Image (cartoon, rainbow, N blue to C red; front, side):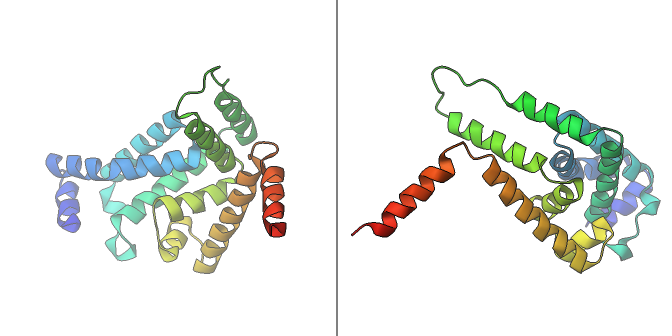
Amino acid sequence: MVDDLIQRARSRDEAALRQLYERHRQPVLRLAYGILRDEGEAEDVMQDVMVQALTHLEQYDPRRGAFSTWLHTITVNRCRDKLRRRRLHERLFGWLRHGDVEEPTTPAPDVEHVDTDRRVAQALGALTDLQREALVLREVEELSLAELGEVLGVPLRTAQARVNSAAAALRRAWEATEPRGGSAARAANEGKGEHAP
């Protein structure tokens, strides 16, 4: 059981500490990257979070939620600190420029997937920090709305509103990344279909 594992880790049992670290490092790293969109910063956050959590296990109160929820809360707070320390717009534009690579003269078989990945990255980058936090926690980490509200420190209704807002913003951003002519061509095809005999 995790509770027993945490008890042993609180007693500074090295095997238990190592097991807790290995069990939770990837979810923490995934969440941090989902919010920050930077592998180096996400790795830094993961290390900070795991060191803080394992060093101060006495601060975890199981009556207030699962251990993973406590880690999610620490991770979100650390990511917010990171975002406050950098100029988000400058970071975002630099990131998008980096992703805007030249296409090879002979397209590779997976070029369509590369383009899709870039569009997803651009769409996520267009979200606000709060929207990205909510979306990653809800859709990637699969938290319930109650857990999401607990991690973000907001009422359940506010958590739901943030998820809805993030989903709508992501859809708009995704449509905005569509190659020129894509929407027009699709609309034309749909129009032809409507008038077909």
